[in-house]
Length: 281
Image (cartoon, rainbow, N blue to C red; front, side):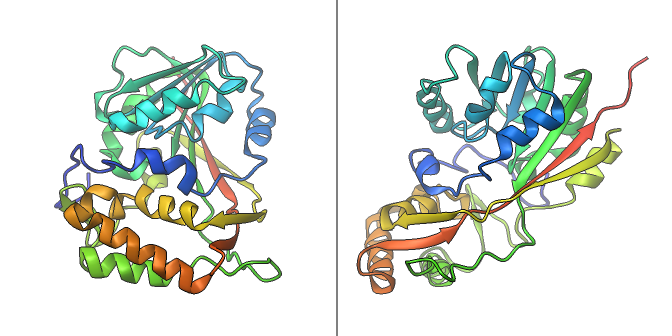
């Protein structure tokens, strides 16, 4: 766990309704790449740990016989359930409100376990060891994230870029200079080092995949507001009685940068690390 910080149930309180609209999508070819590389054929079981509103579990559902999403936030589980009505999901999806530290929680074994930009919130060593023993022979652990090393310019696109530095300055003015996280703070941000944790847990690899993004996206002011409120460090509850004031200022800021309320963005590439558990005797 993070030094000096403890998880609490308010981490994403109120963020779930904004998440699906506000967060940038994973690269559009991700599902096809995983299907080909991993030989997925509509059978097997997927466990998505820290599934949020089903951002990744739902599009991957057609590649498996069953998908189980685990998340401690009740709003996220509720939103995921709504999304499960989408075509191709049918009765394949199951949503469980639980912390990763509560696994295995009687959920059985899986063909694949995925952490999609969620592993940093967990007791990493403990969870890695637990999910290692939940994988079936030949199963894989997938760590999925946006590619952090690329530069995404909006040059040549029709609308201005989202003014993220100015938005962050506004958040700081309301919430202070130290990153908020639930009832606590994260002065040094969330941890990295996932590779070392997985290796210590006995996994081999990783096989690294990069699925290119770069697609042109049109974002409205409503999309950008949703993105801000979908973040743990600017979740709606953190603003308390000043939430409406903050949103009003945020919308004025966006209008100053784009009178029509339209912004351009390029979708991020997606990086996947495929880890293999040790062979069992």
